[in-house]
Length: 113
Image 1 (cartoon, rainbow, N blue to C red):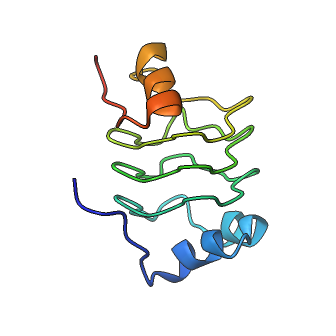
Image 2: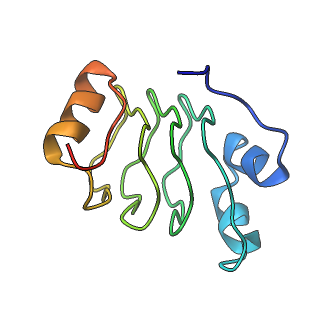
């Protein structure tokens, strides 16, 4: 697995700076935002509109994901080790075992396992 990266993309930078409301208002539902392999470690992403975003192989260690709806986001290969996930929704393709193992052990979540 490659190391998580911090992209220079302005939309990614909004998330890194905690400007979730601004991110949500500026994003276009028609555009494709690619956050694959991005580092979201220890950020507060509460309130994020994650609909349709690609978080494949992203790193969410210690991130506050409470209440975020990832049900229509791509999360294959993402890791949520020690994240706050109360009220978060994950894609149906991810089994509860995959989510639990990632949360507790830091494994990468895989679809269909």
